[in-house]
Image 1: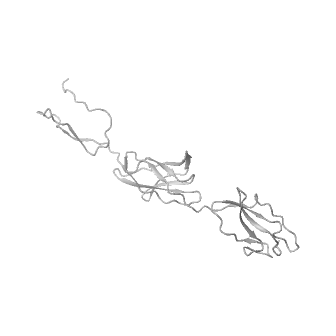
Image 2: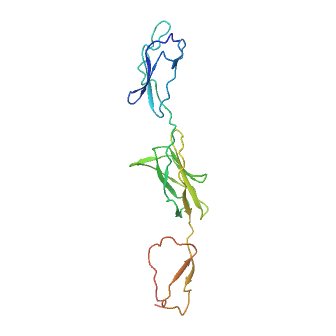
Image 3: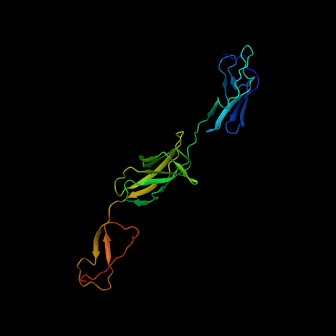
Length: 231
């Protein structure tokens, strides 16, 4: 029914968790309109984002034309709400593969950390989406994520990886700095030996040289054996 002339008292906006009064709005002030109708509009100051609030209203606030007061308090369990989250996460970080590294796996696992729990990590090469992780979890003091890339191609190309973090309110972070990774899944082969195979009159002080079809990375493990051909 329609509300008569506004009564007395205040409308309180309170923090749901602490019961702290955030705003107290006098029902006779300019922020409350609709007296004489069945709809009252309250125009509070801007609220903090991503915060759980509830409303309390003094029992004398809104009488009908006959002077009957609607007992609409307490309202903690009947009129509470959470404000929107409109702040984007900080940009995430790619940890593996390492920046500037060369890999041989065409579908590598890409992993790193985010700035907050939850949401979705998206990993790109340029504008191409490679993989997503929608389960950013906490591990110690870090928020970690991991996803398996779609197939990388061509071999020999350096992929400019970046990642973004989208939170549950669809706010998207800035992308990470470019994280270059080069694909090399071609096995190196020997191009030449020096001395050449079956060479004769080789100096006893000569160095032995192996030339490969591509540059060799960090030396692996094992040994080079010089053996007597006949025995």
